[in-house]
Length: 115
Image (tube, rainbow, N blue to C red; front, side, top):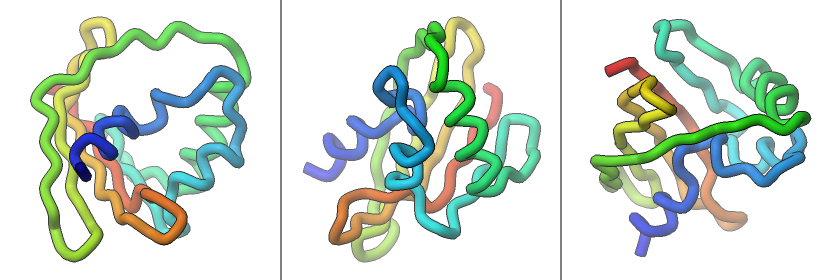
């Protein structure tokens, strides 16, 4: 089921294995990926890749829980995922646009808004 596949990918960028490198994240992002952060700032794919490579290059604690998870088909193989993410008391509403490709799911857009 699509919802189960997408649930396994969220929260995007938080489910990476220890020591995940830039190449790990490149596979899961479309070439035109971009993100709008909780501050409202626009982040490019390059900025997100660099940030993730740095963050995951060292051990870190990343406790989180997801509630209110929903996946909605937008068109064809493109889906919108929304959920509430609680990162040790920092709560945000998240949305990710995913497209299924021949190689698997790729994220096209992500947004986090503080709740």
